[in-house]
Length: 111
Image (tube, rainbow, N blue to C red):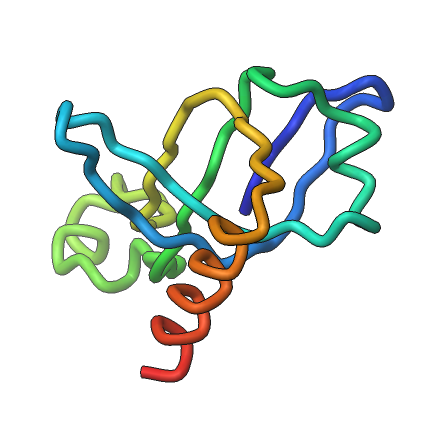
């Protein structure tokens, strides 16, 4: 999920990404956004963004702990796996680059 805070406020877009590391050891997340997506008119190049990757999550009942029945001191909780990646958005419109992005995303998703 790409979270932006542009001219129209906060927005979230659910997009597939792939990760690369440059020769300079910079981590880059890449995705494709259609020109019709409001991101282009709402967000400026180099704006701060947040990308959220959410995996498994689940409610944990206090009744699952043996000590709950003995002491009544356990409380419910929520376990989850998530990664927050902070960075700056960079728009690229070069046709050769875009074809490569689409090929990589297609290959990743088809696997």
